[in-house]
Length: 305
Ligand code: 13P
Ligand code: SF4
Picture 1 (cartoon, rainbow, N blue to C red):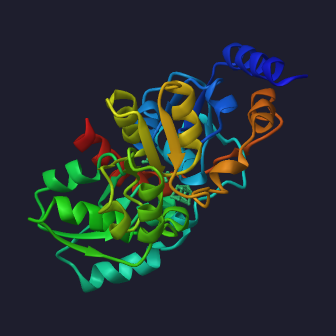
Picture 2 (cartoon, helix red, strand yellow):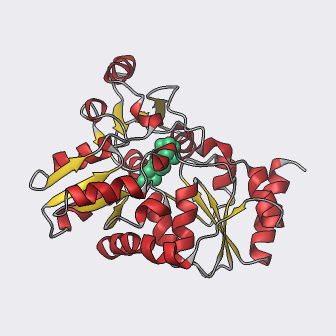
Picture 3 (cartoon, helix red, strand yellow):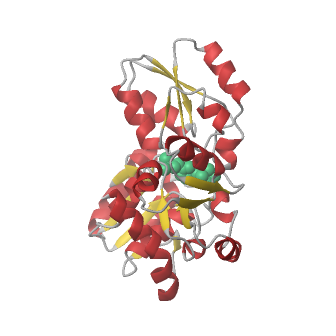
């Protein structure tokens, strides 16, 4: 079976079995081509909340599949590759944040959606990279404890100076490893190019950028811009997707190290096994965890909607 035949078979089986395939933007192009929906973390969450399918396959990482399960506990939810986790999501746990809450009782805990369901149970509101500024600005509370990504948090803090935002020392190992020196070198190598970065990058990298936004926002910006060249400061898959979408423009990776090996784990073969009923990791969560972890997700959707 070649790649196209595998894709056709996936599409046939997903229709036959009423399966919805949700695909994060960092997945490879062959997986994009069998998707029902492609998006950033916020878009995937919104999509998950309204799917009419019996089974949902998440091509992304574990916290994304957990979010789908929380929003639709009655559905069968599969993470296409069961080993695909997000290291940032594992950096903090509920015991640590419950302790912080005791020390800071007047703070609302805002969690980046890249957290485990277990951690979400002690948080007030979730945000994604595309919704964080809007939600924190709209929250009536003044004092915020933002977890776990201090880089995304610092970016939000800069745009919402009227709030008192406390950060902890977490972050995305893929984006945080990029240095300002690398960003300056990329700009020097491509002087005509605009630098577009994800706010999970360090503050000194984001400060050099022409635009910062979520994966979907970066792609939208590049597609709509009159500029012809772009340095992409997020996972390198976005360089390929943009180059395919806009062949008349040029896209360069900010660094060859901008590779999330967790996002890269999922293959088209994994998706094929899932639709055949012989692969993936089924997400199981008890009702108590779902009820507690869903509150901050619902709060996010209420703000976002
Ligand atoms: P977005 O999907 O919000 O752009 O976040 C990127 C990311 O790192 C997801 O794990
Ligand atoms: Fe997690 Fe970073 Fe990979 Fe996203 S890119 S899944 S935040 S490690």
